[in-house]
Image (tube, rainbow, N blue to C red; front, side, top):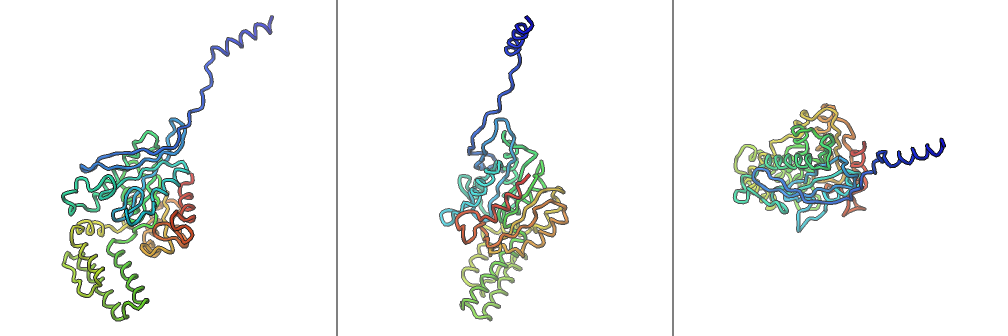
Length: 342
């Protein structure tokens, strides 16, 4: 009788007890378009959400492109299509990090937006405000964890990331500064031009005396721009003269406002303990490793956490190496994985 009663009780318990909750459904990886408005401009981007459990909040990274008309994928079509940011998004997705990348002003679906009829008014702070709005859009996505936001910037985008890191709310948990613009804009331009002139002299296109004259003219042009004086292009090669003429034309406001930023000075606003990666490629002729010395020292003084500066042997500005001309170099992938390690 006892065993029969026990069986009945067990049967009733099985019917009336709350069943164990089923495991949350797995949501497959997906891309979706994200749209947000800043300063009257509708901005378009791609949110990549990796496979995750329903209801799970994910780490998420805002991806910021380099200078010029570089779109959400890291391309400047039709001439340049390295897909740098698209490939970074794929890599981070494999590490369970959601990403948002967007078409900044002058690129992709966004175009010039509110600046269409007044491009000369587009300055660097407008791009920073656009990036800030993108960060807030990423923060508010239902799949993202606002306490675990990252900013990953390439080249000029790394400088923008530094500015966001000290101003947005909540503060990002980490910053990845990939081949960053780490000195003032015109200093970097002059450095690049001097290197190109030296190479042209090595190839016999200039004599050493001509090299000295052109180098002096480049330095004088930078000084003139900063003093708001016309640039004397007499001693400059035609291509270099055109560059400085453009800096005095519709791009003048952007150049001046970008050049006003000295990236090491922005570091003090970062939250102590922020995780920071800074990469520099030994084959990067646009942003040599030596240009990141002052920024690296400033990061140490700010008491941020590692990985810190990671030199990438044989890697160029687009994060490629000789064996991987169309994909992210293994050294770059390894540095990013170290950055995203919990």
